[in-house]
Length: 259
Image 1: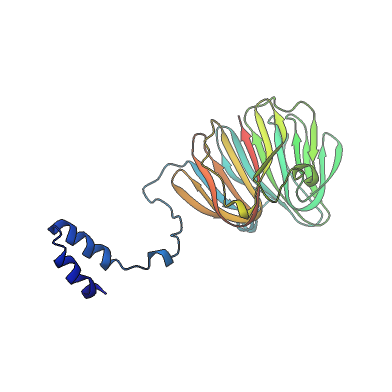
Image 2 (image 1 turned 45 degrees about the horizontal axis):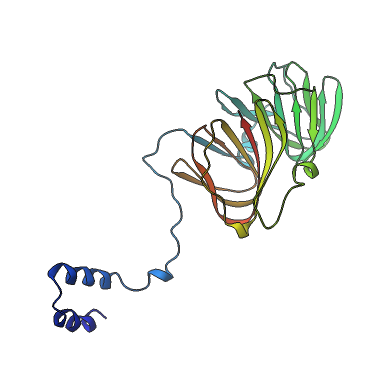
């Protein structure tokens, strides 16, 4: 194909620079339009711990004693509770306000002597200084988020069911349902249908915890990216730009903001 164009280059008396440019372009070939899009990859030069990612299904296999801490930051600590049949979590009373998100299974959450039946998809907010224990007759896995800034919970406890958290979902548009909004923290469900492709880059002045509950996509934060799927937990430090892209299946994300 290159020899086919050489007479044309010679006859048109282009400058040396223009001729070289044409030759380079021709050498690159004409198949670029058929090349697949390059996947987003991690930036090896970015060592800023602006985010941390975990896979619940991997961590639960390492849990001993029913609890495993994942991270402890200035705004929040996050851990996993994993109980087998007829087990009860062994926890001392904490002064911190807490959020339980039931990732899988079902059981009983006892708060200050009150028993709540909980199951997959439920989110339960509990005021600090109250005794709370999780138990199950089968098995249960829960994400436990302890907030370092107290005072956001105005009632002893409150349970949000999956029906409440997903009520605003729309198969044609990105939706945000902040079902829990308190003075210094919000918890909600962010839903992005595959047909929308993702969202724009967002920046927040607060830390953010993402729990993927359905679907899959690519999640980019501060120049680094990870593939996310149900069970992925991602912590994003305040001020870090982040966005979802390459959505392969409608994705749901439970997001907690510490404001």
